Amino acid sequence: MSRLLYTFLLLLIFSTISLFLGAKDISLIDIINKEPAEVMVFVVSRIPRTLSIILSGIGLSISGLIMQQITQNKFVAPTTAGTIEGTKLGLLIGVILIPSSSLLVKSAFAFIFTLLTTLIFLKIIKHIKIKNIIFIPLIGLMFGGIINSISTFFAINFNIVQSMNTWMMGDFSSVLEGQYEMIYLTIPPLIATYFYANRFTAAGMGEDFAKNIGLNYQAVITIGMILISITVTVITVTAGAISFVGLVVPNIISLLYGDNTQKTLPLVALFGALLLLVCDTIGRIIIFPFEIPIGLTAGCLGGIIFLILLIRKR
Image (cartoon, rainbow, N blue to C red; front, side, top):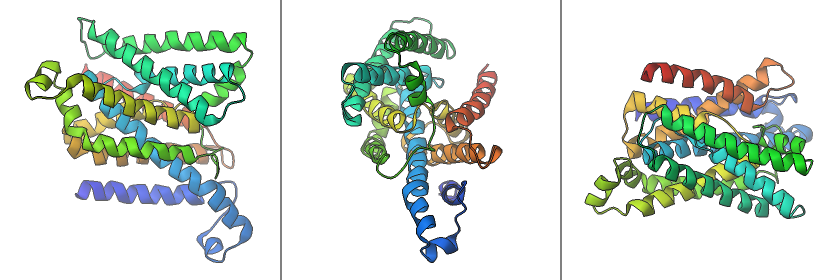
């Protein structure tokens, strides 16, 4: 309980920093006195941005945890399984086929391709005899590279490479009131994940074990993939691709507190949100009043942690 409390307090501290940090100087006194300009920036920009970061951190870290349980591999996550690349391809196809469609329609395309690419990855690793902990994510990275190449081919042919790169750059600076509400669609999958936590743990012990205890293994895998696909799609459409959060957070919590999914799920969620808030704060401070996209800061910090984990596992 104390671990959750300390993590939650840190999350509150960095959430407060996020709310009041930016090019526009805003203080608590301005909010209390209802200064028009400051209140407008606070409501329209700062609150949506902070909420989006928190929900994105929770969603990505829990998605990584589910994938690691299902694949029985600690180095599998949306960034190492072609999942995010599938979202990118789906968005691209949606823009090419129905350019004037709403964001919700484009998101539907992204969801379908995200789910398909994730299921294809699971099929691939199911037929691989060498289940090495490093070998599986390497295959995922190659698979993601192939999907990314297909996306680039279509983008070049339709002259939307620059637009595609802009969509996929993880960045919360453009998150405003009226443009971020889709992020709330991550909440139902997160709630469902908590109730299915024990089933994901059992599925992670292998198909034979799951069937022996009366669990419908394939149904659990499918539900897990659907929950992951919804979460990753919504976050990517809202803020772009953010690397390594879903990879490193479950590993850190697993090393510190074990592999009981239902027990560690709240810690994974809070730590994921905290890590993303820290990355965002660093990006906004380094070249203040300008900022570095969170996709870059999360990629750098997450990459360093991932390298440490690789060396540790070896």
